Image (cartoon, rainbow, N blue to C red):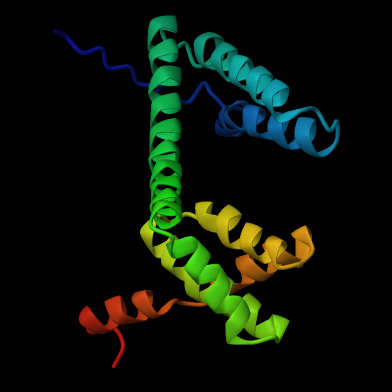
Length: 184
């Protein structure tokens, strides 16, 4: 099976600034369509993808079949890792539900202290840090935040508390740094 390699060479006849502008047009479209026109993301992104394909095929003279293959590869590279992380998060959450660990976590955090600040720290930093270590990429925000909501926290506050909690390093991260001798 042969591979087709295409290159876009800048020669003296092409202005580098024009090439950069054409390459940035799809990104600028997304910024303008989402930020200024307030288009729904699925519409703005579909139009941006179409716009990118047109620019690639017409201006950069990329073969259409390669452009379509590039779109497919980009979609797979974007979707598969995200789905893998979400699957790991829900798997961990469902295991904790089936084993009764989730109910135990919830009851122990509420009985640990009546102070809502301590509950928020225990759930968001402790349990949330565990889920973040297992799944990663901030996907675990729904689980600790929903526990905080079930304890009476307002939804926005629960999400903010969790997101602030995961900004600080968890004990597992610190122990990993120590094992790599990065912390002395």
